[in-house]
Amino acid sequence: MSEHYYSKKPQTESKPRHWTFNLLGHEFRFETDAGVFSKSEVDFGSRTLIESFVLPEVDGVVMDIGCGYGPIGLAIAKEHPERTIYMMDVNERAIALAQKNAQTNGIQNVRIFESDGVSAVEEDVNAAAILTNPPIRAGKETIFRFYDGAYEKLVSNGELWVVIQKKQGAPSTVAHLEEKFTEVEVVEKKKGYWIIKAKK
Ligand SMILES: C[S@@+](CC[C@H](N)C(=O)[O-])C[C@H]1O[C@@H](n2cnc3c(N)ncnc32)[C@H](O)[C@@H]1O
Image (cartoon, rainbow, N blue to C red; front, side, top):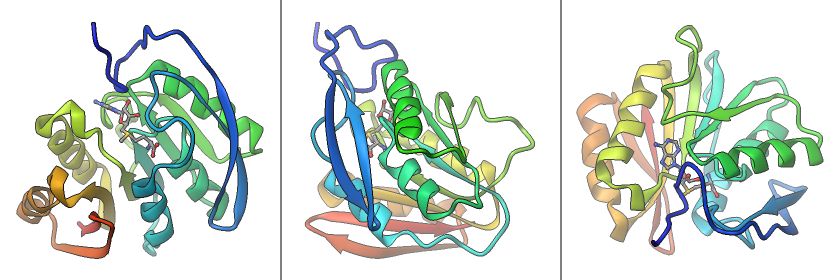
């Protein structure tokens, strides 16, 4: 049976890898594994999202939906030690790696847990910003659910930041976000990847 990186319980034999990567001027040491998205370097789209992101000046936590082994959430956590970063994924192996990677890199201002979209986040927790490199292969319905869930969790003037390739549906993401959000802007386009910012 073929397996996707978004399986809840990857069955693929574990094959841990260790490597370092510089994000926002900080050297990170990452462990990744089979059955988890992007195994040997930080995905180009995630990197572009991290480099483009500007934290809006509103109160609230920051969330990384579909955090994988953690590069986006951990880079933002390091850059903004005063904020708490919530990192969620459905893949148990990814969550275990993200927790390990937080520890290895001495990052404490994070909460990392299993969640389908934002469904496991406490009701009274609201976000200033939500970042996602969405699981394209999980299908449009899942990623539109990410966006709609994100909208509910954001404070007024809070922002959703998405990276998605043009050929993988960036224009339809923009159209979907424009139905709900007050302002939607493509802030960066690099090698076919679009960084989309949607303000509530
Ligand atoms: C494109 S990967 C990005 C991973 C990571 N943020 C990175 O930059 O390497 C998308 C992630 O979404 C996760 N995912 C898939 N369906 C999900 C769902 N329903 N809720 C939360 N996460 C999900 C996958 O397991 C995968 O880790």
